Image (cartoon, rainbow, N blue to C red; front, side, top):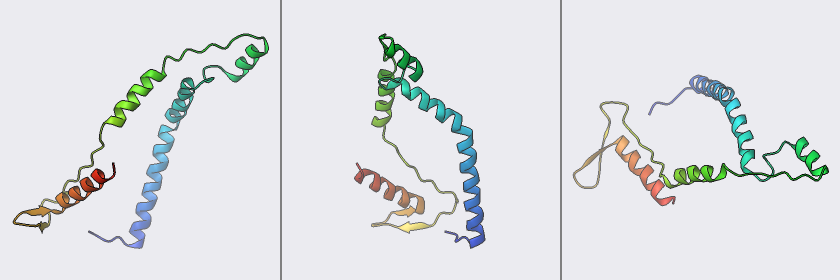
Length: 124
């Protein structure tokens, strides 16, 4: 694996920061919209605070119909059931072969894949 100089590390860090800022600014409106929509799944979140206060003051009910939570729970449950799998693949054609136990040789990518699978299996 190639070692980076201090200048290369600084450039890489700056590039990562710019990409983070670009991604954050790009998705900001969507994240805010999702936060607003999540209010619809919480008790009392379907009414504007001003309207709710006025209706309460007038003795009128603030009825809510939860039509969203069942679908949110189904999607979240489906995602939780699916196992996340990481895959490692070689980026160079002539990968270094590593002698394994017995007569089989492994590429560096295969060894890293095995380590990740072991970590994943032991993490649940």
